[in-house]
Amino acid sequence: MDSMSLEEFKSTIEAAARTRSTSYSQTFCATIRWQADDTNAERDASIFKDMVKEALHLPDAIEFIIPPNHPAPHIWLQRRSLEIQELAYTAAGRSLVIYHYAGHGQQDSEGSLYFVENGRRGAACINASRRLFQDPCEFEMSDNMDCLFILDCCYSRIPSRAMETTPRTVELIANAATDEATSHSNTITNKLYRAIMYRKSQGQQYIEFAELMESLRGEAIAENQEVPTHFLKMGAASICIPFQGPRPSFTVDHGQLRPVHYAKFRAKVDSEFTKEEQEEFVQWLHNRPPSVPLELLESYPSGVQSTSLVFKGAWRTWSRLAGVKGYRLFDDLPVLGHKDIQPFTPR
Image (cartoon, rainbow, N blue to C red; front, side):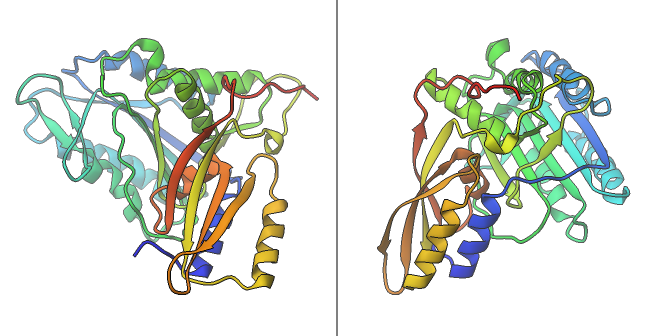
């Protein structure tokens, strides 16, 4: 069944259309690679550490370098990742954990991602979907820990997920390129670093990763490149990080930055809208801020007592809904002439 109740629809669409404002008391960052890697992962690990320290002014990222010939590399990595998560889980206030991986990645027939040591036959591998991605989603008793995965490897599957009301976020960004020996400038790590530094230099007060990935997706499509992968494994709000350290004297109102890439998508609801409900919902749509617009393109019956609603919305809004039951992507709607974020006039 690919539809949802009216209440589920309202809660998910409203949550996805919000911009999160969360401050983190603690941030923990780690970059992961194999010692026997053959993709020049050390280069991307260095870029990630610069991004953390210079662009975001976060605590230094630690390195997890998986040793060669280890009898159980999956246990080695899981133990170290859980040590970080335990620190975040028990810290006072809200914590953010950022994991970065550079190297080979392969997906199996069920969509699980494996970190692979190198391109040689019989190379060691780790089921990252089980050993790394799953653990942050299982700290069910804590609402104070968010997690971001940045994967410089091939990973293009967006798994289905249940609708949740959790205030937590587990978010994933990855390369979608099939060739992992990609050029230095095209790695997702380097693209993120350049995009973050650009926004900082232009006076933005914080970065929201859904907005940033919307821009990178639009740029990739405009340049006929592989589009990066981005989705939420948990929650309905993208991670936001305020800029620290030296910044321009002017600031930009993030809420006024219009989308640079749109999505056309459908929501299937197990209900027929009354006239009053339709009018109330349309009014809510009209009141959206410029940064997260939503336009109802059409509405039509789709079965007994069910309605399909087709929207045009910012890609950042769709990316928060991708994989959720009842929602389906129809098409990308690029903004012609887009090149990174749109120019603006400093105040």
